[in-house]
Structure formats: structure tokens, C-alpha cells
Image (cartoon, rainbow, N blue to C red):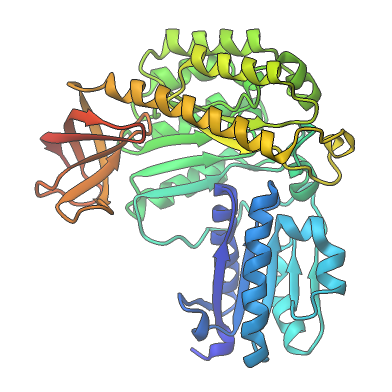
Amino acid sequence: MHRSRSIYIETYGCQMNMADTEVVLSILRDAGFARVNELNQAGVVLVNTCAIRENAEQRVIGRLGDFHHYKKTNPEIIIGVLGCMVERYRKDLIDSQEFIDIIAGPDEYRKLPALIESARRGEKGIATRLSRSEKYDDIVPLRKAGLSAWIAIMRGCNNFCTYCVVPFTRGRERSRSRSSIIGEVEDIICQGFKEVTLLGQNVNSYRDGSNDFSDLIGMVADVDKNLRVRFMTSHPRDMSDKLIETIASRSNICKYIHLPVQSGSDRILALMKRSYTVEYYLDLIRKIRSVIPEAGLSTDIITGFPTETKDDHKQTIDLLQKVGYDGAYTFIYSPREKTKAWSMTDDVSHEEKNRRLEEIINIQRGISLHRNRSMIGQVTQVLVEGISKRSNSDFCGRTDTNKMVVFPRNGNIAGDYADVRIERANSATLFGTQIHAVC
């Protein structure tokens, strides 16, 4: 294939961006382009960006600097920026970043072939309009062969949490049809995938006619009992009894729930516009553990939100210890333009934010270690993902509660299920010995 029809793409940020990249590659394949894995083989270089936090944006900005330097010696190369940063930095990307030929927002990927042709003619290819209807539900994503697939079941968000830029970069909520999602599930099964994760900014608010997310995930699980089904991310306000019971009722719906709390302070939660209290959240956790005792739980924590006091921080620590999460994704608050929190006083120093973050990380690491060590002596089923990165003599894989397990190779291949007795653990990984394999 001629170099001008070769695409090199890098993806930053969340799983939704990874799923979007697969949509982009499908659209471009149908237009006669092919993906390449090396930058020096490409005629078109695309960066799919993330705008959720400042750190993610800085990584992209640094990488764009590398591409700018590359284009100076390869002026025929087309450089394109996709995704959430386009919505935040549209004017700057157009006016001051002259080396960028294409910018396309998350709802404009169908236009990419035409935008590339415009760039070939020396014209800026620009498409940044957000849509209330675009779902890409007629496009079959171009996936690499593997075990786990992502399926975006909805796009956008209506919650407008005061710190979050997603409604401004991805637009309002809209759900795909059940039929298109089930069709995609059937397709990935035919391709040999063993696990699927249903994606959305808030999957719990999925709606197709009278069917909600509980109905959808039950239907997906019923397509093939051997297919593991995961989902993310859930908003606590919309986690229903019906969904909890549906998870418990299907053996192939993974008993793992990622339930972002963000803060353990009711005052901060109100400022964040999270629409629940700590008491409500803890009642929800108790309900989950009552119905699904073995459930693995993880969360998101933002530290250093505007006006967060030492007492607010202490309340977050108290919540971590009360819940006993298996894991937590922890972040320093990043001011985002257009959000309501942007106008609040960012009065927690960077040094204090880092100190609080480090304390949360250390406490959660101890909780995770305790949770993992409690599994020593137990036998758990693991989906083999492949050879461990640390040792060619070991396999690694995950339990349905999303715990990583490492164990000696014993004739398995990726995609097999193995029963492993846990013998030791650290805060991130379980280690054990296989006692039985089921293909």
C-alpha cells in the first residue's frame, strides 16, 4: 500500500478513547486506508486525545511536539488531532499550531476520509461539532485479535459534575439500540474474544425504550454463557437494586463493580454536584455486599478539590477504611475550563494536594494488601491472558473480581480458564499454583 494511505495512530486516556480509535480505524479502512505500527511508515499520523485531567493533556502536548519535529523533515506527512482536546483547544489548534492539518471531535469521525483529502490539498481539515444523535452504532469497530473487547453502549453525559469536562467534550447522553449492541457482541464471540466490557460515561443511565442497563447486561450475558461480561463506569445515584440482582443472577457477569465516590465529605460531594451523600453511598455498598458477598469493589478519588479542608480529607480516609476497596484510582484535582468548579477558588496548594494524594495511596495500598492476603488458601478461576511480563515461566490472568493472578505455566494458552490456589499476595497481585484447567 502507498504510504499516503497508511495510518499511524496513538490513543491517550480512557477505555472510551480506545473504543473510539477502533471506530476510527474501521471508518478509514473502509475508505482504503490501512494501519501501520511504525511512525516512519505512515502518511497520516493521528493522536486520539484525552482532556479529563491536566496530566493527560500535557502528555499529548509533549507528543505533538515530537510530531511537529518529525514533520519538519517529512513535510508531506498529515498530522491530525482527534477527540476531547479538540473540543477544549479548537481555536488554539487552528490558529497557533500550524503543523496540525486535521482536527476532529468525537462526533465527527465519519468525516475523517474527507478531512484527510482536504489536508492533501493544503486546506485545514476541521470538524468539531458535537452531536445529539451520533452513536456510530452502524460501524463495526476494527479490533486487534485478543481476549477482551470494548463495546461503547452509549456516548456523552448529562450529569454535569462541577469538576468534569465530559459533557462539554463529548456532548449529551445518547444510548445505542439493544439490537446493535447484541449484534456486536455476537460478532466478537465469532472473532474469538472471551470477555467484553460495556462502556459508557454512566452505563447505569442506559435506556432503549423500556429497557434499562439491567435488561441490556442480562441480554448480553445470555448471548453466550462462556463470555465474561464487565461494565464501567457506574454512577452511584443510578446503581439500582435491579442491576445488583442482575449481576448476582448471571454467573458470567463479573462480580466486580467500579463505583466512583470521588470524596468522603458530604460538603465536597455537594460542591461536586454528585447528587448523593456518604450515607447513601455506604448503604449502596452494604446492599451490594449483601447480594454479592464476593464482589470486588474499586473507586475513583479526587483530592484537593476547591475548599477541601483537612477534615474533608480525613472523611475521605475514613470512607476508604469503612468500605475496604480492592483498589482505587486516585487523582489530584485539575481545574477544567467551562466547568462550574473552574470559577471556584483553587485554594489547596499543589504541595498539599500531593501530600493528601500520597496518604490516600498508602492507606489504600494497605487495604488492598489486606484484601488480597485474605484470599490466600482459596481457589479462584482465572482467565489466562498470556505470559507474565516479569517471567516467561509464568502465566498471568484475571479473576472475575478483576484481580491479577500470576502462576506457573502448565500447558495453557491465552483464553483458557485455570483454577488457581492462591499462595501469597502483594497489594496489586495474587500468586498461586494451578490445580485444574478448563478450556
